[in-house]
Image (cartoon, rainbow, N blue to C red; front, side, top):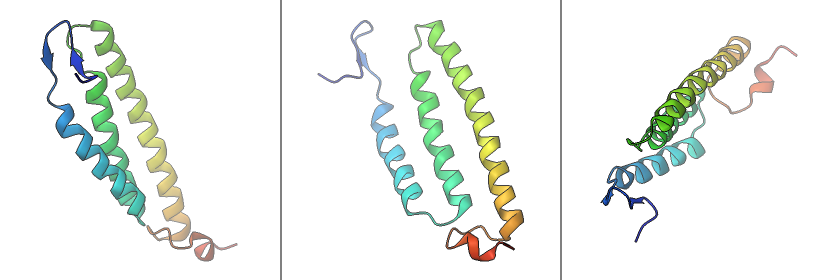
Length: 106
């Protein structure tokens, strides 16, 4: 019937019905945002749903290992994004993306 039906366990993982609209809402926030903080929050909301989607298969220990590795890599990438945002804020003293070049000293 659906692709997310687990045919071995004979149940539907109902969390997908909550994840898809919330992930779509995070995508809309990401596309419509003009501030660095809103971009970061939207990316983190999106990645949360991907982390839980990877770990949704309870029967496989390999899926849990993959979810932990994915979470650690996501934490490192979030730290790099925040570092880049901090450099941009330190250079321009603005969190908006209107025109960061005009605020730079160059």
